[in-house]
Figure 1 (tube, helix red, strand yellow):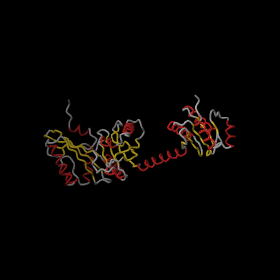
Figure 2 (cartoon, helix red, strand yellow):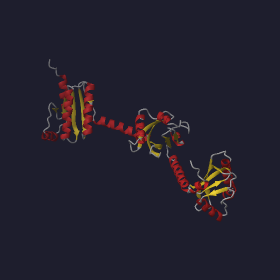
Figure 3 (cartoon, rainbow, N blue to C red):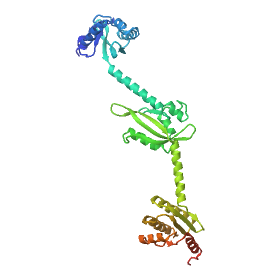
Figure 4 (cartoon, rainbow, N blue to C red):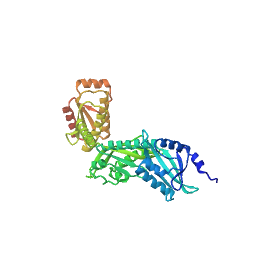
Length: 393
């Protein structure tokens, strides 16, 4: 393999580069270094061939940086280290520039030497600073959330739980193990499969986002309802998710209010379709107001459940309070009578005002075996007479 001369090596490099001899003097430089050296000469620096590089650096960069640089380069020249890297700022430029110096061991004709290269890393430094500031701002905003935030390293399953997140659940900061398994143990067992499917579905690209309602166990043992939202904030070069940041919003009051509303709605439905036993074998259901599709289902289910529970043989449907009798209401009543008939019972329809009777005649609905009476009193009288009548032998 042919040996590359120092001059050829330097000329192949675009960045400012130079070779130091074993005493730390500049033995050779490339064109880019010569240009920088000329600029430094105008500023009072001396970085030409033959100069004591370490002394010049101490003069130009200051004692602190000069001492760090001298120690690192001398370690390379003395073969105590293969390389040394130092990043520094050049405050003489406006705006300031950032450079990275790399000293690598390089044998020379006079003994151990070093190859010096200078890289302009100003843009890299600017991007790193912008990223650092953005992350700091994000964490500041997240820390302001009432329930805090969490940050999940998807590769290692390490999870950072913010202090506020821990405290919102009644735990001291650091009390919860920083691992995904610790979080999984806090999620309600009934919710965990759905939550994991949503999270990994988002990570794998099956879902466009991660958001779900969860119950998380507090230190007190009580479960808190949350809306859990998160986004992937870091990926590798291939697009594989690396980190995910999430936040939770306490919706316990809303969920409890929803449960109250559901219970109240159920009570209202029960009140709107009451089933009243008047004898061992006769029940009455007075209907009031409008009968829509939802209420029709409630009428049917309440009627059938009540007949079965009371072992009744007659059900009186009183429509005195129904404001409108149309084809829909009529079909509800007919379907109810058919369903009751399957249980071996019969339906008595009462409360048929004259105008309602005219409407029913016009609708031409097949009423089948439904018994009709004008008033609830007449309907009860009929039902009790049927109950007292001896059955055919």
